[in-house]
Amino acid sequence: MKTPTRWFGLLLACLLLAGCTWQPEPAPQSEQPDLPLAQVSATPGLALPAPLCPGPQPVLFMDRNVYQPPSLPEPPARQPFCEPVFGACMLRVTDRTRDLAPGDASAGLKNEYSRVQSFNADGSRILVRGLDATWYLYDAQSLTPLALLPLSSEPRWDAADPNLIYYALDTSLMVFDLRTGQSNRLRDFAADLPGHNPVMVWTRYEGSPSYDTRYWGLMAENEDWLPTAFLVYDRVENQVTVRDLRGMPEVREDIDHVAISPLGTYFLASFDLACDRGQLGSDAHPCGLMVYNRDLSNGRGLLRIVGHGDTALDAQGREVWVYQDIDTDHIAMLDLESGAITPLWPIDFSHTPIGLHFSGRASNRPGWVLVSTYSGGYPTAFTWMDNQVFAVELTAGGRVLRIAHTQSIVDESQEHDYWAEPQASVNQDFTRILFTSNWGRSGSETVEMYLIELPAGWADSLP
Image (tube, rainbow, N blue to C red; front, side, top):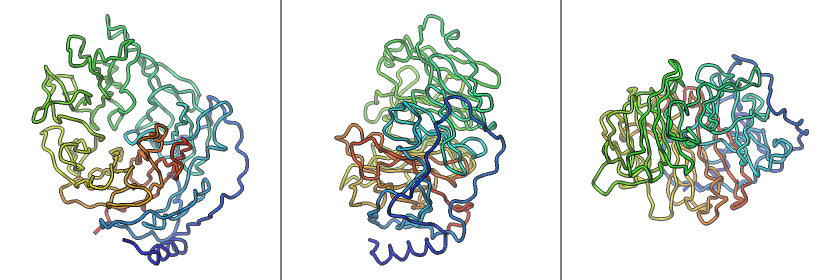
């Protein structure tokens, strides 16, 4: 356990060397102007943001000792500070008292989800969610809000054009252009689903397209919000592949979400219906985690029950699913081609429940995923992974990089605390991390989005 003397030493070193500042009371800030509803003056091809904390970088922690989270007041918005335990440079990006547009009843602001890329193609913009399903555009350099965007469900950045955002609207895939403030319909999938009477075609919140945003794994739902079909959309060729589910009684149980793999090779469906112990799903009788070829053929079960996870690439470029293995209580990796499972790190549930989320969104840093945890005995840590953000190398016995405590209380008896789950996500280069925290305000929904900055090339310098 870290001693108070070591805490103070790390904080002092961070302040002196990395140029971070910590202010216990919020500094006065100028009022933000009312945000425009649709249009924003976007500049394509902006340079990557300058470092938040210039100067020597903090020590990188790779041990698995138990460090208690520090007691800190909520930091002021948009002022860098050093996390006193691990020395990470971080700041609060959002300000729920000033950033919300008039009429937005959201109690807080957050990054959408661990499995969703919040940064645009060149890293110059960030997409932020208001809890009332409103969507804000932030500048990634100044970290200030630019606009309230007229988007619907599941906004996803284009992989190449920093000004394009795709989103789901009923049965259509739409694209919004920041340069014009206008939306266009790419395809209405209702025409591809005769007799289905769909009301929504989407991933059901948690899915993302392939890394290049060419391939999309989607599902259609009817007016009872039950799935009737799987779809794979090739955006480049404007072609749709459909698999009809209406004759399969198993899918009358809801499907939690669907997704496509990073390279677009596989379609993944997470069934709420778990398989019996010792059994896996089949093409005719799906359950648990089902994986299909891109043409939606050859359905095969790879896990009998699905915990939180995300797709990623390992260091060899293989498409994998990194997840909480419910049957073995491990962080584990599943090879989507072979079905081979690699246990990475055990999860110790002997003290408290621990919730985990995974982010494999770092397309330019294969071989690593980001993990964030909650409900781990806050304010007392019992295990090394309690209430933290850390990176895990995708190999057995691989390295772990400890990054920051989240300061978020998630009480399972408080419905509002769902929004306080950190659900950390990472940018393409694995140098900027976003997570959500209520900073100790359980049950309030008054959450904010935080940013952590890692040194460029950190993974190459690890021992």
